[in-house]
Image 1 (cartoon, rainbow, N blue to C red):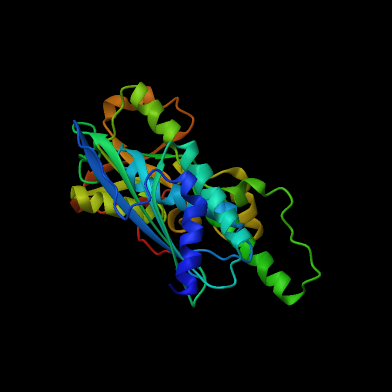
Image 2: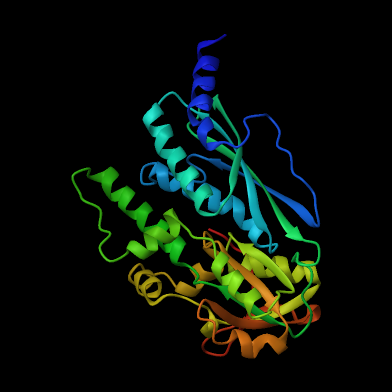
Length: 325
């Protein structure tokens, strides 16, 4: 057996205490629920930068990001499989850090790790994560169920995570120019955490259900609000109108972006990395949802012929476009 194969099996054996099954396949028992699947690929220098991304936080975020598509269908994440390709610069201690974040997040959200595999990489760190979840047959929420005049809602706040990324990238450039400089992160812990260690809005979704509010359509916000809205509208063959003044932007996010000469609305619409839920509800549910602090009503669905628009604070109308950063 080759040396790298021996090392691989030693790693799998080491972490087997955290794995429910170390077979190459996992078995799901079908009952009165539907099984749903999602998978993600994370590549160093593309999806994350280890210059400033702690490995423990990276492990945690990988699980959260992968489970969000399950949550966006009103599902419950159940089983996770992780495959990694690592270059020889990663010592076993580094792998321990990464795995500690993965295991901690899975334990926190009652997700079973059912498979783990390692391989060599010549380009750094690559992680493939796949997840299965379940949802009751009559409770699943897709992207195509919205109706005209329904309300558009979003959980949490927008733009904070991408603002955290902007600050991390700024300080990285300062460090590269002068390694003696200390990073300037005073007062921005919230922004950094929103990027480095996002939290899935599971409790907010549970609160909706307790109020007997069921989204008619829903999507995970990973590429910005504009992209998410366009996906929902296209799936339901509708247009939409949202209002700039209704966008949930934290004052810290707004102020920090203003310092950087960036319009906060632009980042909220196109920044990405929020990992919040965007969904539509019936108008009859407005009275129940308006007092829920973690949810903002930002607009409404309208006819497809009306287009997809935002009304600015100065009462001007612009077409929504998914620009991305």
